[in-house]
Amino acid sequence: MPGTFTLEIVTPERLVFQGEVTTLQAPGLDGLFGVLHNRAPLLAGLGPGAVTYTTEEGETKYLAISGGFFEVAQNKAVLLADTAQFGEEISPEQAAAELTAAKALMLTASAGPTEQAERQAAAQTAQARVAVATKVRR
Image (cartoon, rainbow, N blue to C red; front, top):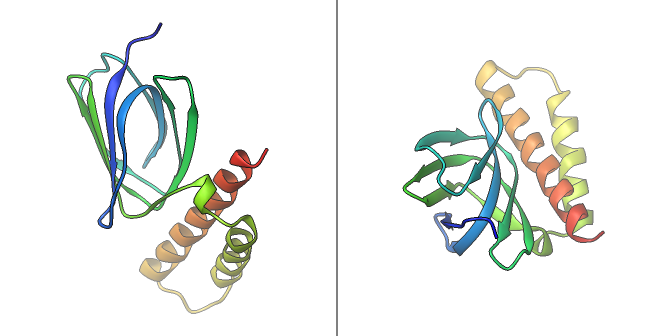
């Protein structure tokens, strides 16, 4: 059996998850990264996307985040997210509508660089919500 590490997923509103896991994959600012037992220490910024982890019981869980920070050291990982939702908490229809609206907003003119970056992050978050909602319903 693979080794485990402690994972805490926290948002400003709630403790999303706390427990032992065998794997984690998260959306870093420069791309996806993975974590296993005995990982070297890491501190990373997170972008919008899907987080996947496997519990020590072998259950794979999916959640969508809108960004945040991640730290791992001595087999304890903490994921601080602006927002986080499990696939079961997301309405696929609502997520798809949000993605359509976010994409349409990106195509409108008169956005400065900051506003365009915010629109892109909103579209990436909506895309992650659609992907996570779809994964748990297969």
